[in-house]
Length: 215
Length: 286
Image (tube, rainbow over the protein chains, first blue to last red):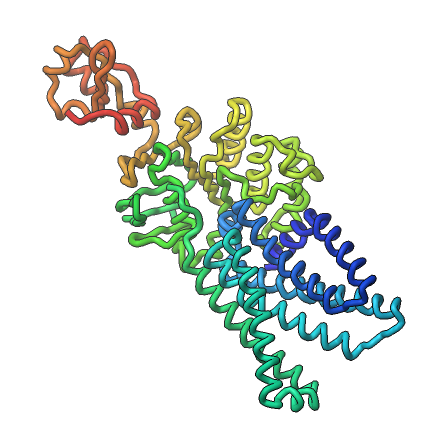
Protein backbone atom coordinates (compact mmCIF):
# COMPACT_ATOMS: atom_id res chain seq x y z
CA UNK A 1 0.00 0.00 0.00
CA UNK A 2 2.92 2.35 0.68
CA UNK A 3 3.81 2.32 -3.01
CA UNK A 4 0.30 3.51 -3.91
CA UNK A 5 0.42 6.39 -1.43
CA UNK A 6 3.89 7.34 -2.70
CA UNK A 7 2.51 7.25 -6.26
CA UNK A 8 -0.24 9.76 -5.37
CA UNK A 9 2.30 11.96 -3.57
CA UNK A 10 4.64 11.98 -6.60
CA UNK A 11 1.81 12.62 -9.08
CA UNK A 12 0.45 15.50 -6.97
CA UNK A 13 3.96 16.89 -6.56
CA UNK A 14 4.32 17.01 -10.35
CA UNK A 15 0.96 18.78 -10.68
CA UNK A 16 1.17 21.09 -7.65
CA UNK A 17 1.90 24.36 -9.49
CA UNK A 18 -1.74 25.05 -10.39
CA UNK A 19 -2.97 24.30 -6.86
CA UNK A 20 -0.17 26.36 -5.29
CA UNK A 21 -1.18 29.40 -7.33
CA UNK A 22 -4.77 29.04 -6.12
CA UNK A 23 -3.69 28.58 -2.50
CA UNK A 24 -1.46 31.69 -2.63
CA UNK A 25 -4.22 33.74 -4.29
CA UNK A 26 -6.86 32.78 -1.73
CA UNK A 27 -4.39 33.08 1.15
CA UNK A 28 -3.75 36.71 0.14
CA UNK A 29 -7.49 37.44 -0.19
CA UNK A 30 -8.21 35.68 3.12
CA UNK A 31 -5.45 37.55 4.95
CA UNK A 32 -6.49 40.97 3.66
CA UNK A 33 -10.14 40.39 4.45
CA UNK A 34 -9.34 38.76 7.81
CA UNK A 35 -11.99 36.11 7.14
CA UNK A 36 -10.58 32.85 8.46
CA UNK A 37 -13.83 31.03 7.62
CA UNK A 38 -13.51 32.13 3.97
CA UNK A 39 -9.90 30.98 3.83
CA UNK A 40 -10.71 27.64 5.47
CA UNK A 41 -13.69 27.10 3.18
CA UNK A 42 -11.59 27.66 0.08
CA UNK A 43 -8.81 25.41 1.40
CA UNK A 44 -11.33 22.66 2.17
CA UNK A 45 -12.65 22.75 -1.40
CA UNK A 46 -9.06 22.72 -2.71
CA UNK A 47 -8.21 19.77 -0.44
CA UNK A 48 -11.17 17.82 -1.77
CA UNK A 49 -10.21 18.78 -5.34
CA UNK A 50 -6.76 17.31 -4.64
CA UNK A 51 -8.35 13.97 -3.72
CA UNK A 52 -10.58 14.14 -6.81
CA UNK A 53 -7.50 15.01 -8.85
CA UNK A 54 -5.73 11.77 -7.88
CA UNK A 55 -8.68 9.76 -9.25
CA UNK A 56 -8.73 11.86 -12.45
CA UNK A 57 -5.01 11.35 -13.06
CA UNK A 58 -5.37 7.59 -12.42
CA UNK A 59 -8.27 7.33 -14.86
CA UNK A 60 -6.39 9.24 -17.58
CA UNK A 61 -3.36 6.91 -17.23
CA UNK A 62 -5.50 3.72 -16.92
CA UNK A 63 -3.55 3.23 -13.71
CA UNK A 64 -6.01 0.93 -11.93
CA UNK A 65 -5.82 -1.78 -14.57
CA UNK A 66 -2.02 -1.61 -14.48
CA UNK A 67 -1.76 -1.39 -10.69
CA UNK A 68 -3.94 -4.48 -10.24
CA UNK A 69 -1.59 -6.43 -12.49
CA UNK A 70 1.17 -5.65 -9.95
CA UNK A 71 1.43 -7.23 -6.51
CA UNK A 72 -1.40 -5.03 -5.24
CA UNK A 73 -4.82 -6.09 -3.95
CA UNK A 74 -8.08 -4.23 -4.53
CA UNK A 75 -8.32 -3.74 -0.77
CA UNK A 76 -4.91 -2.02 -0.75
CA UNK A 77 -6.00 0.25 -3.63
CA UNK A 78 -9.09 1.47 -1.76
CA UNK A 79 -7.27 1.70 1.56
CA UNK A 80 -4.51 3.81 -0.03
CA UNK A 81 -7.05 6.28 -1.47
CA UNK A 82 -8.73 6.76 1.91
CA UNK A 83 -5.32 7.24 3.53
CA UNK A 84 -4.37 9.81 0.89
CA UNK A 85 -7.71 11.61 1.48
CA UNK A 86 -7.06 11.67 5.25
CA UNK A 87 -3.49 12.87 4.79
CA UNK A 88 -4.65 15.65 2.47
CA UNK A 89 -7.33 16.65 4.99
CA UNK A 90 -4.68 16.80 7.71
CA UNK A 91 -2.42 18.89 5.47
CA UNK A 92 -5.29 21.26 4.65
CA UNK A 93 -6.12 21.66 8.36
CA UNK A 94 -2.51 22.46 9.29
CA UNK A 95 -2.18 24.91 6.40
CA UNK A 96 -5.55 26.47 7.21
CA UNK A 97 -4.61 26.90 10.86
CA UNK A 98 -1.26 28.49 10.06
CA UNK A 99 -2.62 30.90 7.43
CA UNK A 100 -5.65 31.88 9.52
CA UNK A 101 -3.52 32.37 12.63
CA UNK A 102 -1.02 34.56 10.77
CA UNK A 103 -3.96 36.52 9.33
CA UNK A 104 -5.41 37.09 12.79
CA UNK A 105 -1.96 38.15 14.10
CA UNK A 106 -1.53 40.62 11.23
CA UNK A 107 -4.90 42.17 12.03
CA UNK A 108 -4.05 42.20 15.77
CA UNK A 109 -7.03 40.15 16.93
CA UNK A 110 -5.86 36.57 17.57
CA UNK A 111 -8.78 34.40 18.66
CA UNK A 112 -7.66 30.81 19.03
CA UNK A 113 -11.05 29.54 20.28
CA UNK A 114 -12.90 30.92 17.28
CA UNK A 115 -10.20 29.61 14.95
CA UNK A 116 -10.35 26.10 16.45
CA UNK A 117 -14.14 26.16 16.13
CA UNK A 118 -13.89 27.09 12.45
CA UNK A 119 -11.22 24.45 11.91
CA UNK A 120 -13.44 21.84 13.55
CA UNK A 121 -16.39 22.72 11.31
CA UNK A 122 -14.35 22.65 8.09
CA UNK A 123 -12.46 19.47 9.02
CA UNK A 124 -15.78 17.74 9.73
CA UNK A 125 -17.15 19.02 6.43
CA UNK A 126 -14.10 17.74 4.52
CA UNK A 127 -14.27 14.31 6.13
CA UNK A 128 -17.99 14.08 5.52
CA UNK A 129 -17.51 15.06 1.89
CA UNK A 130 -14.76 12.43 1.55
CA UNK A 131 -17.08 9.82 3.04
CA UNK A 132 -19.85 10.74 0.60
CA UNK A 133 -17.70 11.30 -2.46
CA UNK A 134 -15.36 8.29 -2.58
CA UNK A 135 -18.01 5.56 -2.95
CA UNK A 136 -19.62 7.68 -5.71
CA UNK A 137 -16.29 7.93 -7.56
CA UNK A 138 -15.71 4.19 -7.25
CA UNK A 139 -19.22 3.62 -8.60
CA UNK A 140 -19.38 6.26 -11.37
CA UNK A 141 -15.72 7.14 -12.11
CA UNK A 142 -13.76 10.37 -11.71
CA UNK A 143 -15.44 12.24 -14.57
CA UNK A 144 -18.96 11.93 -13.21
CA UNK A 145 -17.42 12.29 -9.76
CA UNK A 146 -16.89 16.01 -10.38
CA UNK A 147 -20.65 16.49 -10.55
CA UNK A 148 -20.92 14.31 -7.46
CA UNK A 149 -18.40 16.56 -5.67
CA UNK A 150 -20.54 19.66 -6.25
CA UNK A 151 -23.57 17.72 -5.07
CA UNK A 152 -21.65 16.56 -1.98
CA UNK A 153 -20.66 20.15 -1.11
CA UNK A 154 -24.31 21.20 -1.36
CA UNK A 155 -25.51 18.18 0.64
CA UNK A 156 -22.92 18.68 3.38
CA UNK A 157 -23.58 22.43 3.58
CA UNK A 158 -27.33 21.76 3.70
CA UNK A 159 -26.96 19.04 6.32
CA UNK A 160 -24.77 21.22 8.53
CA UNK A 161 -27.22 24.13 8.24
CA UNK A 162 -30.12 21.85 9.04
CA UNK A 163 -28.25 20.36 11.98
CA UNK A 164 -27.40 23.77 13.43
CA UNK A 165 -31.00 24.95 13.01
CA UNK A 166 -32.25 21.77 14.68
CA UNK A 167 -29.83 22.17 17.56
CA UNK A 168 -30.90 25.78 18.11
CA UNK A 169 -34.57 24.83 17.99
CA UNK A 170 -34.16 22.11 20.59
CA UNK A 171 -31.80 24.08 22.83
CA UNK A 172 -29.25 21.27 22.30
CA UNK A 173 -26.75 23.82 21.02
CA UNK A 174 -26.38 25.34 24.51
CA UNK A 175 -25.82 21.89 25.98
CA UNK A 176 -23.14 21.16 23.39
CA UNK A 177 -21.51 24.57 23.89
CA UNK A 178 -21.36 23.89 27.61
CA UNK A 179 -19.27 20.76 27.08
CA UNK A 180 -17.15 21.33 23.94
CA UNK A 181 -14.84 18.36 24.52
CA UNK A 182 -17.73 15.95 24.73
CA UNK A 183 -19.22 17.51 21.61
CA UNK A 184 -15.93 17.17 19.72
CA UNK A 185 -15.71 13.53 20.79
CA UNK A 186 -19.26 12.88 19.65
CA UNK A 187 -18.61 14.49 16.26
CA UNK A 188 -15.37 12.50 15.89
CA UNK A 189 -17.26 9.26 16.59
CA UNK A 190 -19.98 10.12 14.04
CA UNK A 191 -17.34 10.99 11.43
CA UNK A 192 -15.42 7.79 12.15
CA UNK A 193 -18.62 5.81 11.69
CA UNK A 194 -19.38 7.52 8.34
CA UNK A 195 -15.80 7.08 7.09
CA UNK A 196 -15.76 3.43 8.07
CA UNK A 197 -19.13 2.83 6.37
CA UNK A 198 -17.94 4.74 3.31
CA UNK A 199 -14.72 2.65 3.11
CA UNK A 200 -16.66 -0.61 3.25
CA UNK A 201 -19.10 0.53 0.56
CA UNK A 202 -16.20 1.65 -1.69
CA UNK A 203 -14.37 -1.65 -1.14
CA UNK A 204 -17.50 -3.60 -1.95
CA UNK A 205 -18.01 -1.66 -5.19
CA UNK A 206 -14.34 -1.92 -6.21
CA UNK A 207 -14.05 -5.63 -5.50
CA UNK A 208 -16.92 -6.36 -7.89
CA UNK A 209 -15.73 -3.95 -10.58
CA UNK A 210 -14.57 -5.24 -14.00
CA UNK A 211 -11.61 -3.18 -15.19
CA UNK A 212 -11.54 -2.19 -18.86
CA UNK A 213 -14.11 -3.09 -21.48
CA UNK A 214 -12.18 -3.88 -24.70
CA UNK A 215 -12.14 -7.50 -25.93
CA UNK B 1 4.70 -28.37 -12.42
CA UNK B 2 5.08 -28.36 -16.20
CA UNK B 3 2.62 -25.64 -17.13
CA UNK B 4 3.12 -21.93 -16.55
CA UNK B 5 -0.51 -21.28 -17.41
CA UNK B 6 -3.56 -23.46 -17.82
CA UNK B 7 -6.97 -22.13 -18.83
CA UNK B 8 -9.90 -24.55 -18.82
CA UNK B 9 -13.36 -23.76 -20.16
CA UNK B 10 -13.10 -20.00 -19.60
CA UNK B 11 -16.41 -18.20 -20.12
CA UNK B 12 -17.20 -14.50 -19.90
CA UNK B 13 -20.42 -12.96 -21.04
CA UNK B 14 -20.90 -9.33 -22.12
CA UNK B 15 -23.95 -7.80 -23.76
CA UNK B 16 -22.32 -7.81 -27.20
CA UNK B 17 -19.58 -10.43 -26.84
CA UNK B 18 -18.75 -13.67 -25.10
CA UNK B 19 -15.72 -15.81 -24.40
CA UNK B 20 -16.91 -19.33 -25.02
CA UNK B 21 -15.19 -22.19 -23.15
CA UNK B 22 -11.65 -21.08 -23.98
CA UNK B 23 -9.10 -23.77 -23.13
CA UNK B 24 -5.33 -23.71 -23.67
CA UNK B 25 -2.05 -24.16 -21.81
CA UNK B 26 1.38 -22.60 -21.86
CA UNK B 27 4.13 -25.14 -21.05
CA UNK B 28 6.92 -23.92 -18.77
CA UNK B 29 9.94 -22.50 -20.59
CA UNK B 30 7.96 -21.64 -23.74
CA UNK B 31 6.51 -18.64 -25.56
CA UNK B 32 2.85 -18.83 -26.50
CA UNK B 33 1.60 -16.39 -29.13
CA UNK B 34 -2.04 -15.54 -28.57
CA UNK B 35 -3.45 -14.34 -31.89
CA UNK B 36 -6.75 -13.10 -33.21
CA UNK B 37 -8.20 -9.99 -34.83
CA UNK B 38 -9.10 -6.91 -32.78
CA UNK B 39 -12.06 -7.70 -30.55
CA UNK B 40 -11.55 -11.49 -30.78
CA UNK B 41 -11.18 -11.87 -27.00
CA UNK B 42 -7.40 -11.72 -26.41
CA UNK B 43 -7.48 -8.82 -23.94
CA UNK B 44 -10.56 -10.21 -22.17
CA UNK B 45 -8.72 -13.52 -21.69
CA UNK B 46 -5.65 -11.72 -20.32
CA UNK B 47 -7.81 -9.64 -17.99
CA UNK B 48 -9.44 -12.83 -16.76
CA UNK B 49 -6.00 -14.37 -16.08
CA UNK B 50 -5.07 -11.27 -14.07
CA UNK B 51 -8.42 -11.32 -12.24
CA UNK B 52 -9.20 -7.82 -13.52
CA UNK B 53 -12.61 -9.10 -14.57
CA UNK B 54 -14.87 -11.64 -12.91
CA UNK B 55 -15.29 -14.81 -14.98
CA UNK B 56 -18.61 -16.55 -15.53
CA UNK B 57 -17.17 -20.05 -15.81
CA UNK B 58 -14.05 -22.17 -16.06
CA UNK B 59 -10.78 -22.19 -14.16
CA UNK B 60 -7.40 -20.50 -14.53
CA UNK B 61 -4.17 -21.73 -13.02
CA UNK B 62 -1.03 -19.58 -13.16
CA UNK B 63 2.31 -21.16 -12.17
CA UNK B 64 0.30 -23.95 -10.56
CA UNK B 65 -1.72 -21.52 -8.42
CA UNK B 66 -5.39 -20.58 -8.54
CA UNK B 67 -5.80 -17.16 -10.20
CA UNK B 68 -8.30 -15.94 -7.61
CA UNK B 69 -7.33 -17.62 -4.36
CA UNK B 70 -3.59 -17.10 -4.82
CA UNK B 71 -3.78 -13.79 -6.68
CA UNK B 72 -1.19 -12.01 -4.54
CA UNK B 73 1.34 -14.87 -4.71
CA UNK B 74 0.88 -15.08 -8.49
CA UNK B 75 1.35 -11.36 -9.02
CA UNK B 76 4.64 -11.38 -7.12
CA UNK B 77 5.87 -13.84 -9.77
CA UNK B 78 4.53 -12.36 -13.00
CA UNK B 79 5.37 -9.28 -15.05
CA UNK B 80 2.66 -7.64 -17.16
CA UNK B 81 2.92 -5.19 -20.05
CA UNK B 82 -0.19 -3.69 -21.64
CA UNK B 83 -0.26 -1.78 -24.94
CA UNK B 84 -0.97 1.41 -22.99
CA UNK B 85 1.66 2.32 -20.41
CA UNK B 86 -0.48 2.51 -17.26
CA UNK B 87 1.94 5.04 -15.80
CA UNK B 88 1.03 8.70 -15.37
CA UNK B 89 2.67 10.78 -18.07
CA UNK B 90 4.24 13.11 -15.48
CA UNK B 91 6.25 10.28 -13.88
CA UNK B 92 9.93 9.61 -14.56
CA UNK B 93 11.74 6.25 -14.64
CA UNK B 94 13.17 7.19 -11.22
CA UNK B 95 9.66 7.85 -9.84
CA UNK B 96 8.55 4.45 -11.08
CA UNK B 97 11.31 2.78 -9.12
CA UNK B 98 10.26 4.70 -5.97
CA UNK B 99 6.74 3.31 -6.40
CA UNK B 100 7.45 -0.26 -7.50
CA UNK B 101 10.18 -0.99 -4.94
CA UNK B 102 7.48 -0.48 -2.29
CA UNK B 103 5.09 -2.82 -4.09
CA UNK B 104 7.24 -5.87 -4.91
CA UNK B 105 8.97 -7.86 -2.17
CA UNK B 106 11.75 -8.94 -4.52
CA UNK B 107 12.26 -5.70 -6.44
CA UNK B 108 15.82 -5.51 -7.74
CA UNK B 109 16.77 -1.84 -8.13
CA UNK B 110 20.16 -2.62 -9.67
CA UNK B 111 18.53 -4.86 -12.28
CA UNK B 112 15.96 -2.14 -13.11
CA UNK B 113 18.63 0.54 -13.50
CA UNK B 114 20.65 -1.94 -15.57
CA UNK B 115 17.70 -2.31 -17.96
CA UNK B 116 17.27 1.48 -18.14
CA UNK B 117 20.91 1.77 -19.12
CA UNK B 118 20.67 -1.10 -21.60
CA UNK B 119 17.56 0.43 -23.21
CA UNK B 120 19.11 3.90 -23.14
CA UNK B 121 16.29 5.37 -21.05
CA UNK B 122 16.91 8.53 -18.99
CA UNK B 123 16.01 8.37 -15.28
CA UNK B 124 14.83 11.96 -14.86
CA UNK B 125 12.84 12.60 -18.02
CA UNK B 126 9.03 12.53 -17.79
CA UNK B 127 7.24 9.75 -19.69
CA UNK B 128 5.29 12.31 -21.74
CA UNK B 129 8.61 13.19 -23.41
CA UNK B 130 9.25 9.53 -24.32
CA UNK B 131 8.52 8.00 -27.73
CA UNK B 132 6.13 5.03 -27.86
CA UNK B 133 9.09 2.66 -28.19
CA UNK B 134 10.83 4.19 -25.14
CA UNK B 135 7.62 3.94 -23.08
CA UNK B 136 7.24 0.30 -24.03
CA UNK B 137 10.87 -0.43 -23.09
CA UNK B 138 10.31 1.32 -19.76
CA UNK B 139 7.27 -0.87 -19.11
CA UNK B 140 9.28 -3.96 -19.96
CA UNK B 141 12.09 -2.87 -17.60
CA UNK B 142 9.50 -2.33 -14.85
CA UNK B 143 7.94 -5.74 -15.58
CA UNK B 144 11.29 -7.56 -15.43
CA UNK B 145 12.90 -5.89 -12.41
CA UNK B 146 11.23 -8.09 -9.78
CA UNK B 147 12.53 -11.19 -11.58
CA UNK B 148 9.18 -12.65 -12.70
CA UNK B 149 8.81 -16.25 -13.89
CA UNK B 150 6.00 -15.49 -16.32
CA UNK B 151 5.65 -12.48 -18.61
CA UNK B 152 2.18 -11.56 -19.86
CA UNK B 153 2.27 -9.12 -22.76
CA UNK B 154 -0.86 -7.65 -24.27
CA UNK B 155 -0.12 -6.12 -27.69
CA UNK B 156 3.29 -5.06 -26.39
CA UNK B 157 4.75 -4.63 -29.88
CA UNK B 158 1.81 -2.99 -31.65
CA UNK B 159 2.36 0.55 -32.91
CA UNK B 160 6.15 0.20 -32.79
CA UNK B 161 8.52 0.50 -35.71
CA UNK B 162 10.30 -2.68 -36.94
CA UNK B 163 13.66 -1.73 -35.35
CA UNK B 164 12.19 -1.26 -31.86
CA UNK B 165 10.04 -4.39 -32.30
CA UNK B 166 13.16 -6.38 -33.14
CA UNK B 167 14.94 -5.01 -30.03
CA UNK B 168 11.97 -5.90 -27.85
CA UNK B 169 11.69 -9.42 -29.29
CA UNK B 170 15.40 -9.89 -28.47
CA UNK B 171 14.65 -8.94 -24.85
CA UNK B 172 11.94 -11.61 -24.72
CA UNK B 173 14.23 -14.24 -26.25
CA UNK B 174 16.86 -13.29 -23.68
CA UNK B 175 14.30 -13.69 -20.86
CA UNK B 176 13.24 -17.13 -22.08
CA UNK B 177 16.82 -18.48 -21.91
CA UNK B 178 16.01 -19.48 -18.32
CA UNK B 179 13.93 -22.67 -18.56
CA UNK B 180 11.82 -21.62 -15.60
CA UNK B 181 10.62 -18.55 -17.52
CA UNK B 182 7.61 -18.42 -19.84
CA UNK B 183 5.87 -15.78 -21.94
CA UNK B 184 2.27 -15.30 -23.03
CA UNK B 185 2.23 -12.69 -25.78
CA UNK B 186 -0.95 -11.50 -27.41
CA UNK B 187 -0.53 -9.79 -30.75
CA UNK B 188 -2.11 -9.27 -34.10
CA UNK B 189 1.34 -8.71 -35.63
CA UNK B 190 1.81 -12.32 -36.55
CA UNK B 191 5.27 -11.87 -38.09
CA UNK B 192 6.58 -11.21 -34.55
CA UNK B 193 5.12 -14.50 -33.39
CA UNK B 194 6.55 -16.31 -36.41
CA UNK B 195 9.95 -15.26 -35.06
CA UNK B 196 9.66 -16.09 -31.37
CA UNK B 197 6.63 -18.23 -30.46
CA UNK B 198 6.81 -21.93 -29.62
CA UNK B 199 3.02 -22.33 -29.48
CA UNK B 200 0.17 -20.47 -31.15
CA UNK B 201 -3.31 -20.13 -29.66
CA UNK B 202 -5.79 -18.62 -32.11
CA UNK B 203 -9.00 -17.04 -30.90
CA UNK B 204 -11.83 -15.89 -33.17
CA UNK B 205 -15.07 -14.20 -32.01
CA UNK B 206 -14.52 -15.45 -28.45
CA UNK B 207 -13.93 -19.07 -29.48
CA UNK B 208 -10.53 -20.77 -29.41
CA UNK B 209 -9.93 -22.11 -32.92
CA UNK B 210 -6.76 -24.02 -32.04
CA UNK B 211 -3.76 -24.08 -29.71
CA UNK B 212 -0.87 -25.94 -31.30
CA UNK B 213 2.94 -25.97 -31.46
CA UNK B 214 4.05 -23.41 -34.05
CA UNK B 215 6.37 -25.90 -35.77
CA UNK B 216 3.41 -28.20 -36.29
CA UNK B 217 1.48 -25.35 -37.91
CA UNK B 218 4.29 -24.01 -40.05
CA UNK B 219 5.69 -27.46 -40.76
CA UNK B 220 2.46 -29.23 -41.69
CA UNK B 221 -0.16 -26.74 -42.80
CA UNK B 222 -0.11 -25.43 -46.34
CA UNK B 223 -1.87 -23.22 -48.84
CA UNK B 224 -3.08 -24.82 -52.06
CA UNK B 225 -3.46 -22.65 -55.14
CA UNK B 226 -5.64 -24.13 -57.85
CA UNK B 227 -8.13 -23.43 -60.63
CA UNK B 228 -11.91 -23.46 -60.17
CA UNK B 229 -12.09 -26.79 -61.99
CA UNK B 230 -9.47 -28.45 -59.76
CA UNK B 231 -11.14 -26.98 -56.69
CA UNK B 232 -14.46 -28.60 -57.61
CA UNK B 233 -12.74 -32.00 -57.65
CA UNK B 234 -11.49 -31.66 -54.04
CA UNK B 235 -13.31 -33.44 -51.22
CA UNK B 236 -14.50 -31.20 -48.36
CA UNK B 237 -12.49 -33.28 -45.86
CA UNK B 238 -9.25 -32.44 -47.69
CA UNK B 239 -9.31 -28.72 -46.92
CA UNK B 240 -9.91 -26.68 -43.78
CA UNK B 241 -10.96 -23.36 -45.35
CA UNK B 242 -10.93 -21.82 -48.83
CA UNK B 243 -10.99 -18.40 -50.45
CA UNK B 244 -11.84 -17.42 -53.98
CA UNK B 245 -9.06 -15.29 -55.43
CA UNK B 246 -8.57 -13.30 -58.63
CA UNK B 247 -6.84 -16.26 -60.32
CA UNK B 248 -8.82 -19.17 -58.94
CA UNK B 249 -9.02 -20.71 -55.48
CA UNK B 250 -6.78 -20.84 -52.41
CA UNK B 251 -7.33 -23.48 -49.76
CA UNK B 252 -5.83 -24.07 -46.32
CA UNK B 253 -4.60 -27.62 -45.83
CA UNK B 254 -4.11 -29.32 -42.48
CA UNK B 255 -1.30 -31.55 -43.74
CA UNK B 256 0.38 -30.38 -46.94
CA UNK B 257 2.62 -33.47 -47.16
CA UNK B 258 -0.31 -35.89 -47.07
CA UNK B 259 -2.08 -33.74 -49.66
CA UNK B 260 0.84 -33.63 -52.09
CA UNK B 261 1.21 -37.40 -51.80
CA UNK B 262 -2.38 -37.71 -53.04
CA UNK B 263 -2.05 -34.84 -55.55
CA UNK B 264 1.61 -34.79 -56.72
CA UNK B 265 1.01 -32.03 -59.28
CA UNK B 266 -0.66 -29.62 -56.84
CA UNK B 267 0.95 -26.22 -56.08
CA UNK B 268 1.19 -26.06 -52.28
CA UNK B 269 3.14 -23.50 -50.24
CA UNK B 270 3.83 -23.59 -46.49
CA UNK B 271 1.32 -21.48 -44.50
CA UNK B 272 2.40 -18.78 -42.09
CA UNK B 273 0.39 -17.67 -39.04
CA UNK B 274 -1.09 -14.65 -40.82
CA UNK B 275 -2.38 -16.78 -43.71
CA UNK B 276 -3.84 -19.35 -41.31
CA UNK B 277 -5.55 -16.55 -39.37
CA UNK B 278 -6.94 -14.96 -42.53
CA UNK B 279 -8.31 -18.26 -43.80
CA UNK B 280 -10.14 -18.84 -40.53
CA UNK B 281 -11.47 -15.29 -40.34
CA UNK B 282 -12.33 -14.59 -43.97
CA UNK B 283 -12.37 -18.03 -45.55
CA UNK B 284 -15.25 -20.43 -46.01
CA UNK B 285 -15.81 -24.09 -45.24
CA UNK B 286 -16.44 -26.31 -48.28
